[in-house]
Image (cartoon, rainbow, N blue to C red; front, top):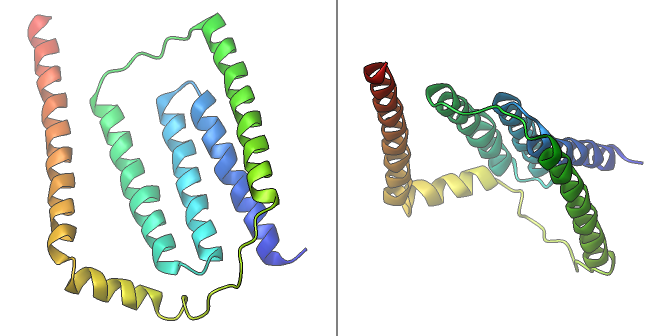
Length: 171
């Protein structure tokens, strides 16, 4: 077994375990940590595919920024952590059944798959090619996405502060 195959199985196991933990954990902060592990392991899978730029963006944006933004959103809002006993048990069995059906479907789909000849030259300066494309042809959409994300974050903080004022006003 080569190192690449071992790394693939390890990163895949971490990604799948993170997804399963995300579905089954009780506390919202633990769910975000499981989500961050999933994001980072998917970034590692991109490295194995020789897509270093996409891996870097995956880890930086999703593993870091999105996870931190979710943690801030959770800290700034109110939520219930009450458990639902029987409903939780049914939910767990449905999750296990869904995972089993997913794996059987994926196994049947991948089992007879032929990928053809591998491409060559894709990994040559891919970060440079993507950077040139983004900052020459797609500058305006790139900046608009940044502004929209900033407005969404400011709006979320504003709504959370408004709820806080209403709670203090009613008490």
